Length: 129
Image (cartoon, rainbow, N blue to C red; front, side, top):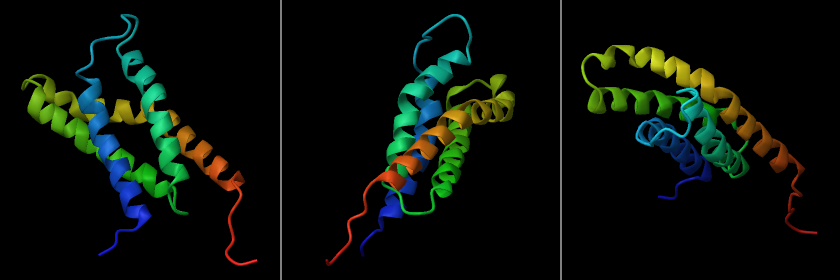
């Protein structure tokens, strides 16, 4: 059975959403200015190019990449809260999820939009003459 390109791209979007909160909570702090800045700077460096490449190699339904990414983000925050936090800090996982979605949405949406724009401007190769 042959898998389509869209399934692979959406699986990668889901996996990047799961991996980002789990890995970003384990990285030492970059700056002491703000805790949320420690999530935003790696998002610009890592998630922007990932979503740009996923948008470039995706089929015509690009918004599904965003849906799968945010679904993976919810799964990743839930896994992180259940496995790696104590019972006291498990209560705040919903607020953590909402905060990460609000914080990462501009980066992820702009990466997808730029990938769509670049993909639209690329020359299309036609078959035949």
